[in-house]
Length: 406
Image 1 (cartoon, rainbow, N blue to C red):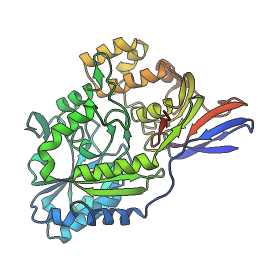
Image 2 (image 1 turned 135 degrees about the vertical axis):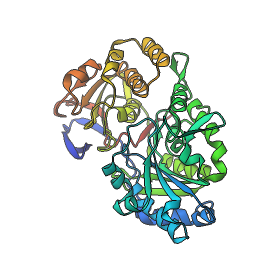
Image 3 (image 1 turned 30 degrees about the horizontal axis):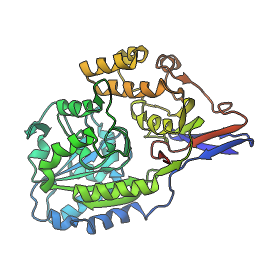
Image 4 (image 1 turned 90 degrees about the horizontal axis):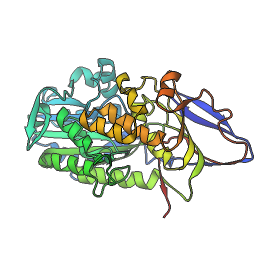
């Protein structure tokens, strides 16, 4: 048997001996319709319907995700803008704000790809600046573009998130367009003492301090926000969309994701082979926390994790942080809490998995740096699995959440 697994913008192949039992965990491939049709239907049937909500607005900010993930912006941004223009708004009454959080600014070429060339020429597209043009709203700093508008449209993809439970919803605002200090404060809530908080993790929304902080900080915007959230198919097509209030749209996408992108399992495996799902899910090692988190759920403690993530844009982690990999988890947590940095949090999250499993990484990263992290680089899938026994394979591991049967 030969398995084709995504890697960057191409694929790698795994030949499996017929004596080996392979359990392939994959996402549901069914789609609900074409992306444009799903968006139009969601806006029309939203709770409330989009055009009725937009009527009478004089200054709208449309918040979109950045370059680091596939969210379907090139499909829904033109639809939203055209509907606003058809309803009588002028182009200068609309601003598109890219929710960077603390990521690097989006380049002009990336902006064009996100919103399409026509919309880029027509509408003002700006990067969020976490250190400038910030307005305090009940103790939390947000982009002045948001606070100066009379209405805000937030958009984005709902996926499993290793900290907030799910992406999407109010995460477009915090961390998306919040002040640096508040993004950092929110992410600090990952910890309780020097250990991860037990309420933090993918699909965890009850008593999750990271999510609770996001929700509480953004509630003051509730009356002026419209939300369009989507779920993406494994090949980065829109497979579901919902619109209206944040609670309605985000909740509907969460329910859809749980029904289509979770898989039950009864026992853990000695060997797990997992692809992040290709570009942009394996854009950088910083983006790989989802695949490490999801794949490790299937693996026996001390078992072998083979992670496929090209990391064509490198680590996205400052080289000065590599010394953390040789520290104890407690020492790393102390260092992180004393001088909190987003890339340092990614190192800590990776360390927790690297310490529990034998992690092998197929990537474009320098081999000496992979070794320094405590992982083992490998260049081919040949010989990575035993000739007999069992192993688990996740072709799109960043988008699928294994859940153990109780």
